[in-house]
Length: 223
Image (tube, rainbow, N blue to C red; front, side, top):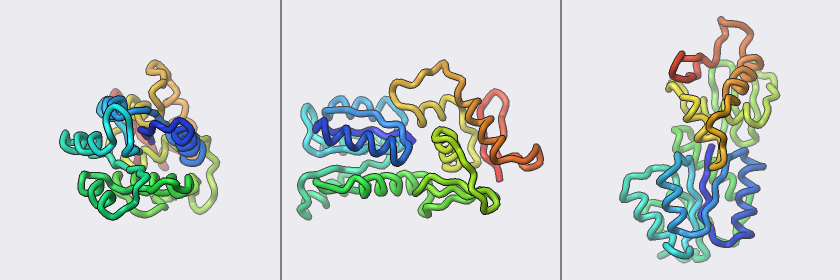
């Protein structure tokens, strides 16, 4: 999953970025003011935006309202130093999906981020089932027929994204855009490598195919 952090406090932003990358395995981009954050949110396919309210150039409430007015539907988690009822009701009415009051526990922020992404993809449960494969999105573990499957960090991220897009044809470009941050290399052929690794670990033979290649288009998850 790919997340945008819009936060002008450099230390706090850095902690959130590290936490999401290390604990959740997300690709994370960062903006330090509202104008830059608004531009990035409109220019890239994010699965979640974490948005501070008090920002230079353009305040977070304005960023939030304009994104929703212009039809952007990705989940937005608001960070606020004010936890009074009026502020919270206002940001939720403006289109925020959730909020966290500063100071906050990083573990709680990560858990809320995961929950928002799951719900946006149409899943409320932590555990996702595809045939005989079970994916636990809380601890990023995978089991096949009840037995643990050891995946690399990127193999897990590819599988999780395909599960969230189950039944759809997912192109390599879409995978790259959602699994890598702003600096990803568009000429890379790494997706084929991860798909190959997943097939080796999740499929016994052609009859137990989990990931199908749609030639000239991309991949689809079966099961």
